[in-house]
Amino acid sequence: MTELYLHNTFSRQKELFTPQDPQVVKYYVCGPTVYNHPHIGNARPAVVFDVLYRVLQRLYAEVKFVRNFTDVDDKINAAALEQNIPIGEITERFIAIYQAESDGLGVLRPTVEPRVTQHIPEIIAQIQALIDAGNAYEAEGHVLFNVPSYKEYGALSRRSMDDMIAGARIDVAPYKRDAADFVLWKPSNETQPGWDSPWGFGRPGWHIECSAMAEAHLGETIDIHGGGNDLVFPHHENEIAQATCAHGGKQYARYWVHNGMVQVEGRKMAKSVGNVLLIKDLLAAHHGEVLRLGLLAAHYRQPLDWTADGLEQAHKALDRFYSVLRDVAAVEPAALAKDDADLGRFVGALCDDLNTPQAIAELHAVARALGATPDPAEQGRLKAVLLEAGSLLGVLQEDPGAWLAGGADDDEGARIDAMVAARWAARQAKDFAEADRLRDAIVAEGISLQDSPEGTTWKRVR
Image 1 (cartoon, one colour):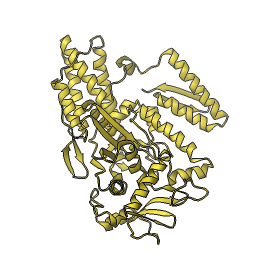
Image 2 (cartoon, rainbow, N blue to C red):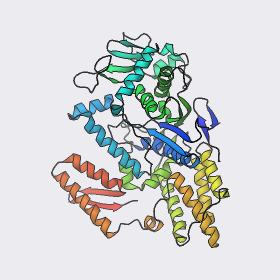
Image 3 (cartoon, rainbow, N blue to C red):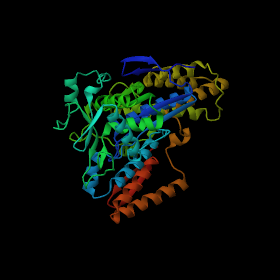
Image 4 (cartoon, helix red, strand yellow):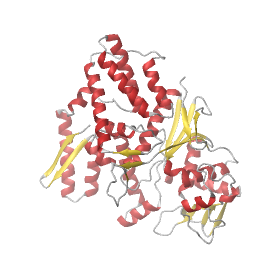
């Protein structure tokens, strides 16, 4: 079996991946806080860790992949108060949007997508275990983790305590025993969501949520924990402290994998700059495979500069791949040998710490060879390699003729016309929630909408 190597943030080294159980890989990735439309920065971990999921599924008999939804949070509470609606209305809407837009990017659904609000008993139990172990304490309706009680705190981020206190922007409260202590449970007032607990009516802190959900679905020790490198501290550092202390010193996660951040045309994404690119808008203008290949163009651990030129290159690359596949449409893909050299080089690139730039280069090499050979048997083999390699990257999943034509058939056109008309009617009736729902559903199907005072026109972009 091909060996998988991953860069472990904890050791700062590339390591051979060996799961605890050779038959089952336990894999957790921090998911979104659902109160707003996801942007291209949110899409990068979704796509990167989807590729890792696909690679793991190829190598192991079973992969239990958990990616959570944070559906209680101060930002969600603020949005609910502003709109005078329950938090559930906001979170349900944006969970559906996140899932639809992830589908549009070709992201496979995880094994489980747990929500914080469905795991309050598990969160309370883990907090109580930390109190019983002497690592947490109650103070004025709060429960806090006592950082000095865990001597290994800071091992993941490798920061000094002074740097960690500054970096976490820690609230200096009089009830804290130490400035670095962080909240596990906090009280809720009448305008905030909350649950009954041994410490009063309240809600969980952010960090305890993931460690409790990971335990609930994957057990006390997981194989791989993923997320953006902005989560290394304080979130993942705190997860380690909580889970290790709650489980009598057992290792929480054996491999920590983090992706780099996304900037746009050389600048950090920021509302003040006006360069926050929403996935819904990008999907309205581009096929999801184009966005996906653009997100995989740089190595996952490096920063990604999202540019119009890079997007155009991704589109042209896919056009070339689909053109080659269209030219051999009548050729049946061959059954590949386990030691096929071309597929082996591609898989080897992905197994070398998800080296997607090298994997994409191998894809180009296979496409060139397929376009050049006149031998039907070789065409069948190379076509099979191209399709299987594409499936591991999550691309080349469309019909080549339809991709290159970029059109819709009559029945599909009539159905989309009806959805567009229904959205227009909802807007005229000022039912903007329904209009937004229909827009998101239409865009998720690869349709671009153009609104004008006279109405809405549409075209298929993927």
